[in-house]
Length: 190
Image 1 (cartoon, rainbow, N blue to C red):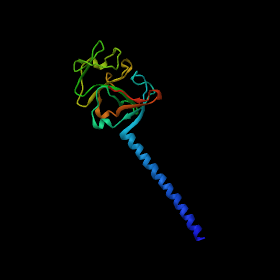
Image 2 (cartoon, rainbow, N blue to C red):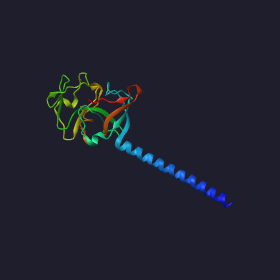
Image 3 (cartoon, one colour):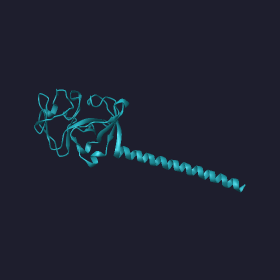
Image 4 (cartoon, rainbow, N blue to C red):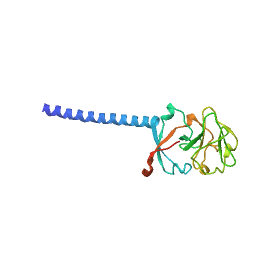
C-alpha cells in the first residue's frame, strides 16, 4: 500500500515538474520572440503603390532593426519609419538625401543633391510635383530626405506632413520580401 502511495506521489510530482518545465519553456520562447521583434527584425506589410515597381501592395517584408545600430543609413536604402500624425501607421520609402546635404527638385523633375543631379535607377518617371523641395532644403545633422519609387503617387519628404526624417525615427531597413513567394528574396537597395 505504501509503495502504491509513493508511486502515485512520484507520478503527481512528475506531472507537476513537466508542467512547470513547459511553462518555463513557453516563457523563454515568448521573451526571445519579444527580444527579436524589438531589437532584431519584424514583419511589415506594404500598403499602397508608392514604392512600385520595387515593392507592391500587400508585399510582406522583414525589417532589419540591427544594421543601423552599427552603421549609418545610406543613400538608396529602403527604410521604415512611423507617420507622425497617425498611430500605428508606418511609411516605407527610399533615402535620397543624407544628413548635411541640400536637396532640391527642379521644374523639369531633376533631383539635385548639393547642386548636382542625382544619378539613380529608381523613380524613373518625371516628377510632376516637387512639393516643398521646389525650394532648396538643407538637411540637419540627423535628417534624411526620403521618396517613394513611384514618385507621382508617393507621400514622402516633399510633403510637409512627412518632411525630413530624423535618424531616431528610423525603425529599420527593409531586408527580405517573404510574400508573395514568387518574389521571395533579399531586397536590392543600391
